[in-house]
Length: 249
Image (cartoon, rainbow, N blue to C red):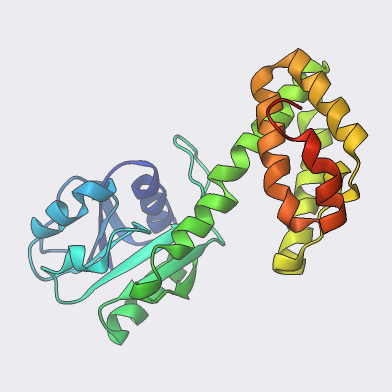
């Protein structure tokens, strides 16, 4: 299989690395010719349709965007989406997509099979996604990756204030991994733990006083995230701690 990846950014570079590792004849750049089997568009969302229109007819054409509608590739009768559900960092030598899910949407069943086969070759696990349900899996991916970052960075900043920055992996690693494993095992019924779940207003108030002395932004993050946790705890606990989470608490 001859593959061309258009877009040498994070996603495009990662896919090209995986393709080379899998033994595919892969190239990466900003254009494509008809002399390849598959062209995969990995450019910013606003540019997808324009890039697709410039690709000669012939190759199978896909994109990695989790949000752009499939009809952005309408100039190509057999087109697909292969959206890697993974956070990708630049300038990493390792294969970052191994084992991640890849959302597959296609114009027809045969193209979907080809896209799924490509995902397998690249080390990903294909997951069918109906066009009318996109971009919901993309939104879920944002919640599960990008939106975890403020909480983790806040935790690391608090550890640094305690003089424990060099212990962040030892302290936070097991805690974060267990919390994620528990949540995925229990699903949307995953029980919360900690002072909010216990309805422990005194501890919440203590935490906020100490955070205000360290960094007012950390206090704001604590209050906002704890407020978001309220629907996941018992009504009694939520009622008990809610007075400690307001802006003037």
